[in-house]
Amino acid sequence: MADVVCLGELLVDMTCQEVGIPLARGFTFEKNAGGAPANVAAGCASLGTSVGMITKLGDDSFGRFLRDTLRDVEVDTSGVVMTKDYATQLAFVAIGRFGVPEFEFHVKSPAHEQLSPDDIKRELIEDALVVHFGSLPLVSEPAKSATLAAVQWAIDAGAVISFDVNYRKTLWPDEDVAYETLAEAVSLCDMVKVNKDELELITGTDDVHIGLTALLELGPELASVTLGSEGCAFAAESYMDEVEGIEVPVVDTTGCGDAFVAGTLSWLVESDTDISDLSGEQLLKMYRFANAAAALAAISSGAIASMPTRDEVAELLRRVGQ
Image (cartoon, rainbow, N blue to C red):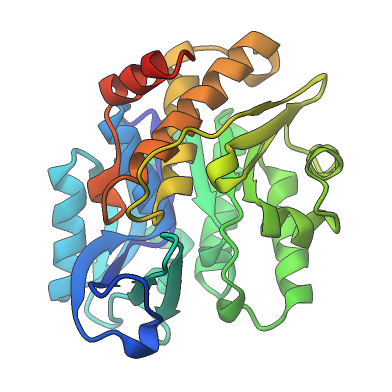
């Protein structure tokens, strides 16, 4: 069975090939596999960690493409359910002047939102060391109930629970509903990752140190905030620190946050150490590793295709003296 199991959306990113313009002005699009939890799964696999994916896909050409893409990068797809009743989600993406993506989702009631508790291969959850999920399955039923059930099974089995807020404003009915749902999810996890906007949404502050402390008060043992080119900051109960950004030639930041999460999960599994037993020095090493993985993901286009290997991360850390 897989050491890490990722649960959530697997979708097609239709990426605009005219770089530096908004979606409204794009004409040529390239098909890529995407979806934050799926990117994390691919990132873990690229880093040498055994990983499985739980999701629901349309039994259509796009769904089969996505399932095969994960298989090609050695992600266990035994937890991927195919359905003829719903279509696979398409996300159109334009990359702005500074490599920042703009998203629009174009399938109403896509297959991944129809995942039910009965669809989940429970033994995958209960045998995992780490279960990771994101916020998109929490937007609507039955995926919300399925996700929360899987998280509870993982908690009962003693797995580490990892959560990436990955807030997409246009998918939520309003900010209050989003806040309540996301805060509940944070309270269930052992590790949480946010960006600066998500930090403010959940904690009410854009001060990184105050915000990280507030996140820990919700329940996690570890909290991290990615800061783009400035690197990241992280906190545990008795330790807080920052990791400087690594300067790279940015092509596409899609998937950088997912590479960061994959870096933390892969490092944690490799360390074979309980979160509560990690020293400050170990935490610093883990987040340096994750930060380097994110930097490497920015130097090529696409998400899954840009996930780095463990050797590539180690080489970058060596070159920058970390």
